[in-house]
Image (tube, rainbow, N blue to C red):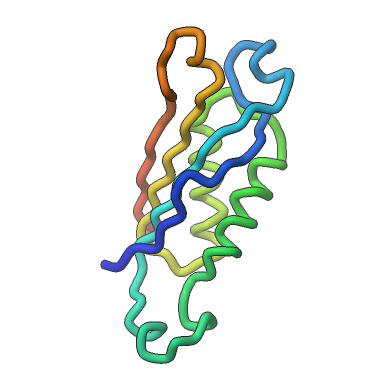
Length: 120
C-alpha cells in the first residue's frame, strides 16, 4: 500500500484538559499518513487521480476550527472521521504533537498517534 504524507503541519487550536490551557490557542503539529493506491496517478500524472495534499490540509484545518477539544485523541479521531468521509483512503495515521504545555518540564512535546483502517 502506498503512503501520502504531510509532516508536522502547524495549526493553532483550542486544546487541553485544564480550562486555562484551552483558554487560548496553542500551536500544535499534526502529521498525516494516508494509505491508498497511487498506481493510476503515477501513470496519468493527474491530480484528479490521487488524493490532493492541499485538500487534506484544508480538511484538517476545518476540523480544528470547528471547536475546542480537551484531548488530542478526540481531535485525531475527528480528523480521521472527516478524511475517511471525503477521500478514498484505506488507512489513516494522525500524529498530534503539543509542545507548549510541556515546556516547563523541558519535554520537547507530548501527544498521540492514532491509526484507523477504513471499515468496509
